[in-house]
Image (tube, rainbow, N blue to C red; front, side, top):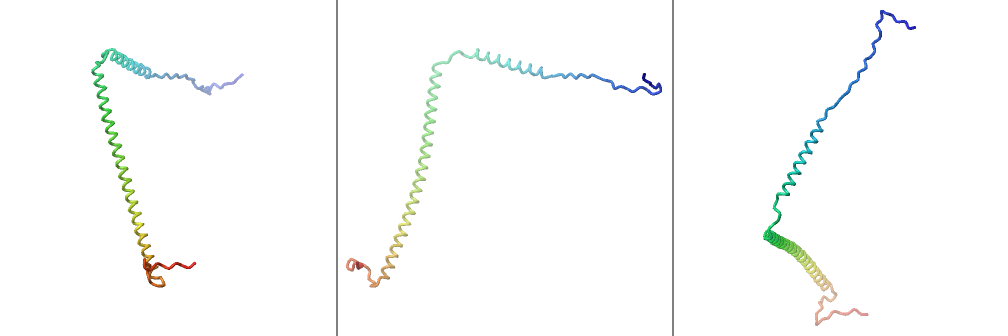
Length: 144
């Protein structure tokens, strides 16, 4: 048997509570709203496709083709003009480069000729008989 003192209050037991949380979602109505809008747009598109004119005039087609040809000719002429301009610029650049190279070669040849003339003058002044070679006085041949 269990002894309980009547002067001591009994221990309190914790109360168990069950709480259920229910969430309300408002996303369900937004999905239906979007689906409804898409359906309306689809109905309008189908109506538009059914209401447009059935055929086109052959004269309009011919005019459109002629305009397309003319536009193509203009674009082709512009493209050819641009290509010719680029080719002319390249040719001018090549011509400048060639002229610069010829000028440098000419300066180098002139410098070489000047140096050769200077060397010949130095040899003529340093020759033992101090006589320059001429048709009347050919240079002496070294003995073999």
